[in-house]
Length: 287
Image (cartoon, rainbow, N blue to C red; front, top):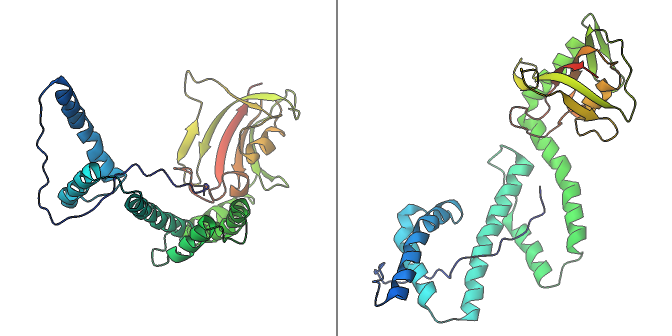
């Protein structure tokens, strides 16, 4: 979870009144008046999207929003009232923040929520200078405590999938021709390579296809016209399981490599690749 920073509130004070008037008649006397009116019309479509997507104002209450907008645009400046109204806006952000944290801590268990009052208490203590630690120290503690809670929540959510991937590896390790490296990476030689073995600083060129245990292909560069994939083993930008396998493959080798989730993407959700996924790669080292 990224460090939480409040966005600057770009909203006029919203003040509801008993007035039913939701219209303002333009007074177009000259070119500047028309220019100003055109700008307003041009802004309306973007504001409509902003109301829906960012402010999450139900279209059912558009007239109430307009009343507040008129009041905010025409009222005399009142720093005290403005501060209060911006506090309401930030309060909504605090509520959203608590809901986002709940989803990270409890995954798909919608019956559990983190107490928003604890989040508020921390923010207010910091604003008033009454916090018992610095913001940086507090964020360090936050990250340290969040990680195991996230892992536990995801393990509950993906318990069935995690067990299936672990069983696949356990069964696969017993198959003929499959070798298990100390790291847990498994491989099966499809073609023996007779070229040089890569060193820790080699750049390896290869073709590959990546699959999940159900056979779903999530990535490949074997199609005609695709360039070979290059991996600099001195500064690899691939998952650890890839590095482990490539260091064992002489040029000319073609292996089927089975990478446990700990050496792949772990608990990260990568779209097609769900948390705790075992990855299967057919890798051919060209050079």
